[in-house]
Image (cartoon, rainbow, N blue to C red; front, side, top):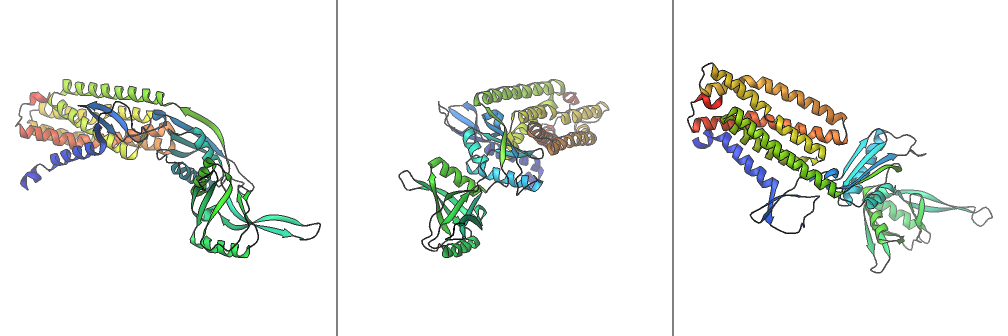
Amino acid sequence: MDFIKNNFRIIVIIATIVFVCNGLFTIRPHAEEANFDKLKEQKVTTFAQKDIFTKLKLGLDLVGGSQFEFEAKPTDKVPEITPEVMRGLVKVFENRVNASGTTEAIVQQVGKERILVEVPGEDPSLVKRRLLKTANLEFKELIVENAGTNGETATWQTTGITGADLKRAQASTDGVASWSIDFELKTEAAKEFGDLTARLVGKPLGISLDDNIISSPVVRTAITAGSGQITGNFSAQEAQDLAVQLNAGALPVPVKILQERSIGATLGQESINKSLKAGFWGLIAVIFFMIFIYRLPGVIASIALSIYVLMALYVFQENVTLTLAGLAGFILSIGMAVDANILIFERAKEEMNEGKSVLIGLRDGFDRAYTSIFDSNMNTSMVCLILIIFGTGIVKGFAITLLIGVILSLISALFVTKTLIFTTVKLFNIKETSLFK
């Protein structure tokens, strides 16, 4: 127990390194051909006939994909595009994209009436087809007026049961060439549907999609189970698209495409390679500078910097989709991560120049540099928060990674570096102040 108590901080650091490395990296036998999903994991390197992967999520500009900008259009029923309408639109877009199996898509509002959708690695025609359609499903009753006269008219009247009452929808086939949509209604709607079909036995039930009757089967018997089937000469793709749209919900208003852009994976891979190279040489340059200028503390700071890089990548993996701008913010944060160490070491050097011992000089150096370090990091963090709140797209991605880097660099300097340097001094009984000047 005394050992754990006396070495608690160093045990925490070692446990953190093991936990982060275990969560960040996956090791598999080496394969000559790439057989992994680039949307879900990235190959880092090959070592000793083993491929090392990480599950960092990369954005559209790095893995390729499609980017769309949509504009909401008012209708007679919704004459004004309000914030509530836009929130509903974003939610439906997210549901439709996620139902396609693309979990790394980004859907966000830009401006008052526009939505930006970024879908990595997806077929642009599929995304466009599934997002554009309003998919407003309604069950309608045929109302005949002036029956048996020359003025006879027949109109479809809504019954109040819509796509919003669906519990689920699924494309199905008879095994030949006919596709349909199997649906199940929510409990309350199922009861209403049973009453409706009981009243319409022997009469047609209209199934309307975006105000167009796509099917009007004659009701043979009351449907009380709350399930049914929509037919309408669908192709396989049309049935699957409609099932996705119905499960995701109808768009509150129609939308139109303002801009469409595709990014190739080749450009993305080139950007990844250049960014990794820049990050590697940037890290090496910082390490050499710290060791050359600060000697022993520089070595300790370099180890702490390496731990910082691992922690930052782990946090990115769990919470951030990395874009090219985000990578730039991370690389910049590597240089900024040593700022706190430089302030501490310079203060400690001043204390030792006044004749203080190594331990006392380091203690006073950390204590007196803390205020400057905290103020500096808080200023940078406030700027990052402003960019995150008011920025969009590239600017926001840059700010998020930089903010994470700033917070982790503060932890690295005040906990990791401090623990490592005091442990080293005590373990090797270092008393020569020349190693710190």
